[in-house]
Amino acid sequence: MLKFTYADAEVLELFEKLFSKKKENLPAADATEQPAPLMVEEIPFELAIKGRQMVEITEPTVLARISMAVPALFSATASAKTAQLGSKVLYDAILPPGKTLVKSATMPGAFRGFFRGKQYIEGHAQLVQVDTKSAAAASAVSSVMNLGAMVVGQYYMAQLDQQLREINEGISRIAQFQDNQYQSNVYALLVEVQGLSRFQMEILEEEEQRKIQLARLDHLRLECTKLLGHANLSLQGIIEQPYNSFEEYEKALQEAQKWLGYQHSLMLMLTKMAELKFALSLGTISKEQCSIALPEYARSVQNIHNGLKEWHLVQQGKFSIDPEKKARKREGIEGAIFSVVAIFDGNAMFCPVREETLAAIAQQKEGFAVTEKLEEKDLFREEVQLIAREGKVYYLPAV
Image 1 (cartoon, rainbow, N blue to C red):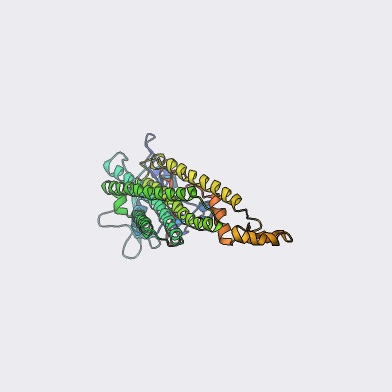
Image 2 (cartoon, rainbow, N blue to C red; image 1 turned 45 degrees about the vertical axis):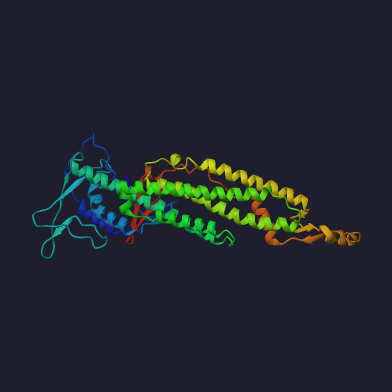
């Protein structure tokens, strides 16, 4: 159901004029009628948003569709406002020949329920119940339900676009290294996915276009898994190599930090691509199906994390690294020289370890959270509630 909530005081005046007829003058509702997927109500703004996120709708094409739908929404809820929510049926506004409804001065695309003469209000529109089984009514219902899907789709895709921007920033923070080809491939993949995440009404409304985008997304997912596999193998190679000095270990640690950054970004991209697939399908493909491959890749990443943790513990013991003291035991010739001094000062056998090195060790031992499946909430199946206030329209996602 698409639900509009109005928090502006002017709405009260509109309803008084639009629905001033007595309840007994309204056509009786058929008890067998299905509730219309439209509902308009006026409630206090603070009550409407209490404990809920409010997301402004800024996409021009979506706003245009909402503006077109508002007059229909007013008439669709005549019984809701005059019969205490008794029935939710569609009504036609009947006017004398040559007369038109007066445009609303406070809401773009909306109309008031009366028509003017030369100077004053000449009369009100007559509301006649529409047969909801007719093709026109079915088309109106379908149009509004499609609008609801567009609102939810825009919300999902706007979130994904922002999250992909954050991934981009994370990749930018990874230091340059010799394999520039790999880095350029990761950037190219991200740019392609970001392009698909841009909301485009004409693509979401056209099934064939959405199929093309979904096929493109599947191709990009395969590219992402290849790059992720490369990062996993590189980290595994670092873990398996022997290191005879702390300097060698520290150099390998820095290399691992770069690959871990790419691994993190690519795993996030796989998750976002699963979410994008769900958004592009407008909920027709289940979240479970969209993320069916995530558990396998999550396990492979987690295995690398477990290996990294064990590797660091071994190196920590081998080179006598003390994270609390931020120091390590001297080794080689340096250790032999200071062993004499250590007879008088036990701390002489230890030298400081750089803060950056200790931070990298701690981060790699901890790893990062790996997503195995998407959250179960499906906003496409929830009531789509919009709220209009001060000339703006907001979407209130279901709690």
